[in-house]
Length: 464
Image 1 (cartoon, rainbow, N blue to C red):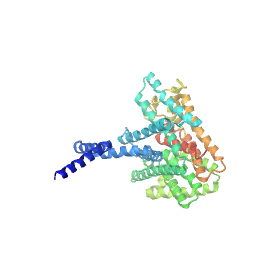
Image 2 (cartoon, rainbow, N blue to C red):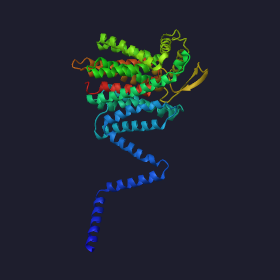
Image 3 (cartoon, rainbow, N blue to C red):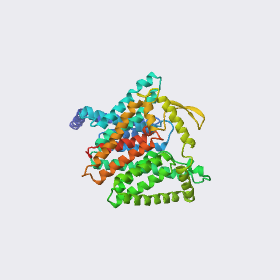
Image 4 (cartoon, helix red, strand yellow):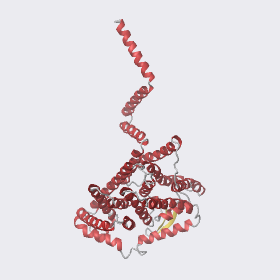
């Protein structure tokens, strides 16, 4: 009996010694006990396991660039929330995004000892971001709002996604996966907008109600979906792939029509025209475009039933209205806004007034003087914030991407997939330039995501 007790004590001592040799067992046990205490005592303790799961996924995904980039792209679904303030979901997405960007730069520079800036366009982008960051001194001197500076700096930081995507896209498989995730994002936003528009216009009686019920957000994504899917369709050889890209074009085109935004319409048309000129497949392009246009019309008719003709009339009225010029009150308001911004820019044209700066102008629609962060003209927006110097840096990066896309297109051994990506990037970048005349492209998170992804695909080593 005594021998048996002695053996059990020896076994316990042995296990204790082994556990002490491996302290992570103790840490794990303490963690589990702490978790049970938190879950049972705190009001929202039941959320603790979810919090741990998110932390675990974050740590796991950060070391896998493809997973991290795909997560960031898909996280743009949060724009469906359409909250006026900053929501908890938006905070979470922001923490994940900026945490990954910081992790990637530290890992790349400190631990791997590699260069981040590897080309001239990289230099232009980094220099632009440094100008944005340094503009805090202008904000402080002018008694501006550091909070607004930080908020807009975070928006510009989306462009930094270019660097990790550029490296992740070195392998074709990764490029296809990221593209698929992006198109999935476009489709989700598309379905949401189409369904909500058909619901909002179910019982309309007047033509103006069809336009007022529009779903205007997501316009940049719809333009990207139209141009990208058209390019992939033209250069795809598999029937299943053609069917998929045609479906993306059909649905994103329908959602784009239902935004009733002329700026986005004109941008998409110009982008498709550029694609038509550069693709070398004019007959295939025309026949496919006409066929899909018919399907778009049929889809809209199916969704809205008897309102189909009224929607067609509303679209044509919006597109070629005699009031589309300066007599249109909204256009006249944009012109008044641009004049006020120009008058402000002239006071400090070289370095601007800093990221987060505001301007005042008289709103002729509401008949009040308003102070605003946002400028509807993308070029004026950049110049107001970072001056001519900062604007030239970003535009040098932008046009440098277009130049490199043309350069890579001249490579004789380039295959259809690479060609479709390069053509889509050129066409889409030109589209965004057109849109930026009436929309703050460089202040829009969706547009900046498109620019970052498009630039990364062009500059990835798979094209060099």
